[in-house]
Image (cartoon, rainbow, N blue to C red; front, side, top):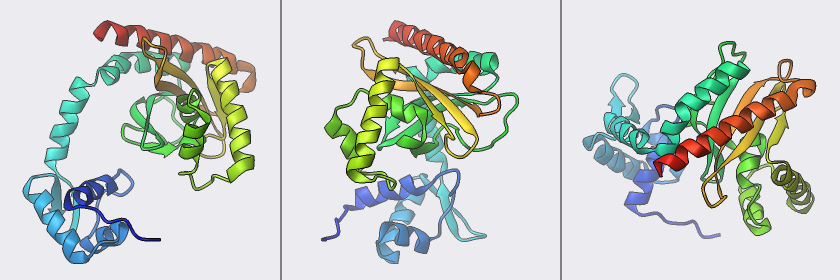
Length: 251
């Protein structure tokens, strides 16, 4: 198969996309390896990004990390992102009421992307969700909600991106599950992310009825027990309705 070629701009954007909380810095050789480009090309692009403030270099370990210009863009984005702003107080209230972590999620790059998260006062896990975190769609209740109204062709294309996708049998199983999610108006995932974590998600819709986001409540299975799960579902549904009304007012 012929390897796809990228322009300098595309490679520069791909470099910026490598950085995350889990992997905050890279050497030139590591970046070149990740993107399958020459070391000299990686160094040239990093030098340009560094000059513009999007990349900073740590001269002690000789690695690169995101620069201050990214933080400036982030502040502008968050300030103007109505959905993010409207969710802050609603997620805080939900997290306090349920005493579990509450998140606002969107579908981005065929993954569940966490736009905002408010932690519980009694967390038993760390780093599962935070603003900027992403997870495979099928590993989250929010992901299932976000794609539940999509066509079978769209879902098949999204699933084909996932490493765990197992063609026909898996697709049929997941389509059936997503149909149930659409009918119920919420999704529950047990052993979410990893064993012992339960999550509940409800869609957030725009005025046309399109799903634009999801609110997800996350906690340990010993607290979110099946006998009480519908109490939590009601809390999340009320939060989603409140967010929809708040979002409509601003648009």
